[in-house]
Image 1 (cartoon, rainbow, N blue to C red):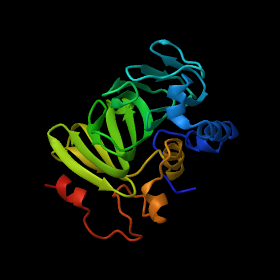
Image 2 (cartoon, one colour):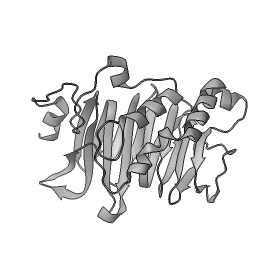
Image 3 (cartoon, helix red, strand yellow):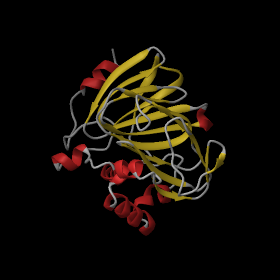
Length: 253
């Protein structure tokens, strides 16, 4: 497995894609046509639910459908994978979020993460947002990971695993263009005068993004190029990152 750094998460949480139940569910999801077929046939868009979760305050069951406009909350030890349109989501335990409706029923315009953590892969489309208590990310077609740390006054973490993301925290703005994990903190209070600060790649793996991409018939940037960089949170594709990345330059202005 790709080396990764854990902060407040367990190794077991990051190994969900190895479970036989998920592999079977993912294969079945792909075999029956994915999200388009699920929508057309009024089938559930939940790929896997392991543990307890709430949908709009009521217990979420595997046969239910999560729609734009819904609120989702996961309990301790819960793992939830679902797909809306061309976007796939992995919701970790103890998370609370809302998927707001876009131009159609199957388009998510905003993922509002109140607490917890979500990995997601977004197909190409109009600009959409991920909003946490301390940062906003305008996303296009990309794979990302977001987490809110309640024990740090809801300080928020965001990794642009690949793609282009317009980042914002407080008055700070940066354009992140990444092929291999470029990460940020959205600070509660300014750190050395900045609300948007660089971070390391933590609490998520390449394999998670690869499986989520596969659910919406996509591949990650490193799968396409056949090359991985150094997972240091800088977004490089070189084996020895030694020069300033464009987004680093914007962050320091």
